[in-house]
Length: 86
Image (cartoon, rainbow, N blue to C red):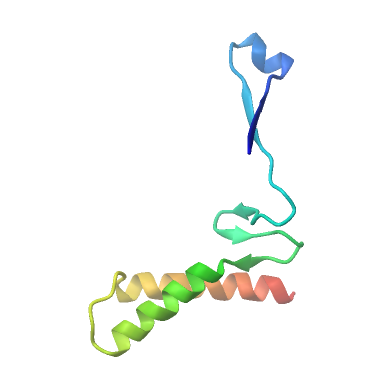
């Protein structure tokens, strides 16, 4: 649900500020990292997609990412996992 509220200082310039109201069970994403319960995690969908891509590369099939892209996502997911446990 997107709720629009006007702020006096913003109305001075003729613009309105939009607020995104997220409910308790909705994923709160910032830069691809879910931050709902104070623990940083990556989305399950992204982890499954990366696992499927690695499996396709292992079988010698075409994949939607190159090796450097896969390595970059691996580093990102490892960084998020380390931050989750610390």
